[in-house]
Length: 290
Image (cartoon, rainbow, N blue to C red):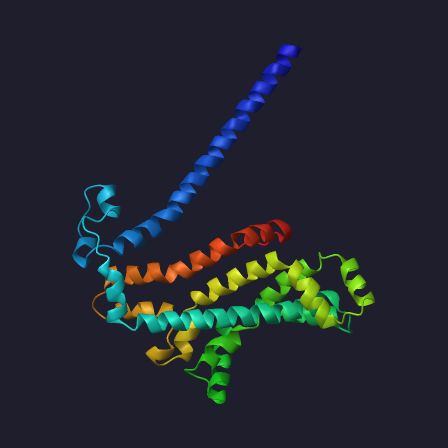
């Protein structure tokens, strides 16, 4: 009897090790498939234009340049107004992120902690706007921008983007998990709604706020269509459109395009590194997946 138990445990252990090995194999393959494009982009940004099109004899030659041309990064700034594109993206990205986190958190607080007639119906109506594709509302919003005279200004790039039903929904779900006792104690101490929101709700919601910050900044940083629609001049263009400047009708400066892409990727990586702790914590608490 004891021998049978030992055999069953041994078989279960072998099966578990097999599944673990399979899981690790899948994860390693997935990690490699994710890293390879970034590695190719980085190494291509350090090659000459001619070297990019040379047929590599092995995988080492594919990824390791024979001569590192760091000048590509400086040349990207000389060929196009890359610095202006960069500053525009940073300014618009920060403004949209701050605005969206602020409006979403205030709306989420109202929908989760305040009581007023028709609150739930209004929330579900607001939530239903997530079902409308952005391409449907793009033209009407553009017409509004023209009527306001905001086309080719920062107002058109920022203001339509600072309201988010998704951000409101995500923060509302997090706010609802906060203990009600803290709010009641604050009311007994004489705190008003705004003070409770500012001094209690927001400090306790750092993981969710950090997650929304990362999502919003990443989404806006890579936004191509809306800035293309509402800007007409290089002085208002953002990075995704600016990178297209390295392409012409008949050719593409791939080495400069890749150098620009590497530089465009850096802010996203930096923000993720600094907010990673909150980001992972929020996913564990709310189950939100990016």
